[in-house]
Amino acid sequence: MDAQTVMQQSIHNGQSSAPLDAKMQSWVQEELRKQVGEQMGALSEQVTQRLDKLEKRLPQDKVAIVVFSDDMDRALAAFVLANGALAMGMEVSMFFTFWGLSAIKRTTHLKGKAFKQKMLALMTPKRSEELGLSKMNMLGMGPAMMKSMMKQKNVASLEELREIAQEMGTQFIGCTMAMDLMGVDADELVEGVELGGVAAFMEQALNARTALFL
Image 1: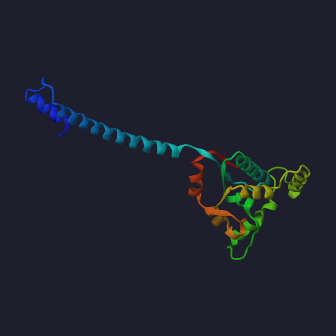
Image 2 (image 1 turned 180 degrees about the vertical axis):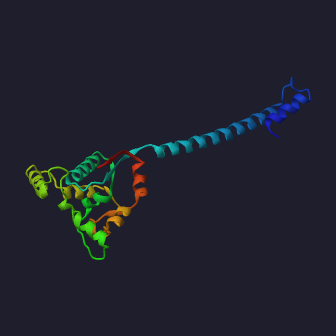
Image 3 (image 1 turned 90 degrees about the horizontal axis):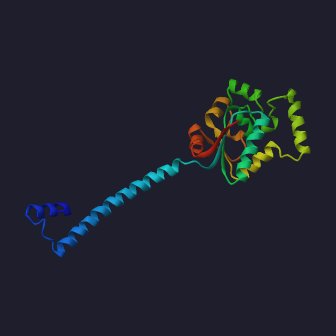
């Protein structure tokens, strides 16, 4: 019997004008406290659950970078941005797909590959040191001049920037679909590269404060 039922019975019996005895008043108050406490507890739990969901949706101090290009200048920009974000205390994930896989290649081998994959391997840079420029490539003269000027100005090379990024905790993800299509094997990539699909990167990107495509 709850407090409301007791009050209704008292009114029905013509006792609404008569004061309840101390014991009954105490019982009614206790029942009311219990009901209010249960309702508040349920409400508090609902609020906590909703706050947890909202916190998961909020962007974190992360940067997600898609590296699509195999141009040396764009790859350099990607690693410079990654290292800059790391220096600011942010987490960084880099997703290398299609031509961008060349930025994390250390070698290329043709054995065991299908004809079309061999052709792709021959037409793309064998390793990151062979990346060309997006402009003024000049049959390889452009990258050589750029590297020379970078050395004179004490600017780190692409490989040095990549190594620094890895040492500082950057997550490298190689796109498995692009690797399969282009015939790039895992042992052709630098050490420490994780293999994953779009879903693996999107999980990181959705929680990132900034997402970049290069």
